[in-house]
Amino acid sequence: MHLDATEIIRRPLITERNMHRSEVRNQYTFEVVPSANKIQIRLAVEKLFNVRVTNVNTVNFKGKKKRRGMHLHMAGKMKKAVVTIHADDKIDLL
Image (tube, rainbow, N blue to C red):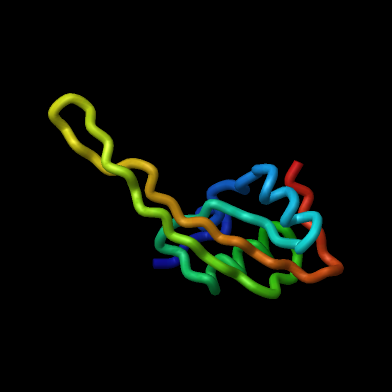
C-alpha cells in the first residue's frame, strides 16, 4: 500500500519534553499512521520539511479498552516516530 507523505505524518506532537528534544538533540516527534515503516517515515519527513533525516525511532501504543454502556471498544491506538535530523537542518513547528 503506497501512502502519500501528507498521509503518513498525521501531526507533530508538541509537548515540553519534545520541544526540549528539538532544541538539544535536533529530534522531532510526530504521530504517524500505524502501518508506516521507518523508511516511509524518513522519506515523508524529508519531502514535507526539506531536511536530511539521520535516524528514525518508532513506538507503538496499544489502545485502551473503553466501555460505553454495554459496548466495549478500543480507543487511543497510536504510533509515534522520533526523527533525528542533520545538525545543520531545522524544522519550525510553531
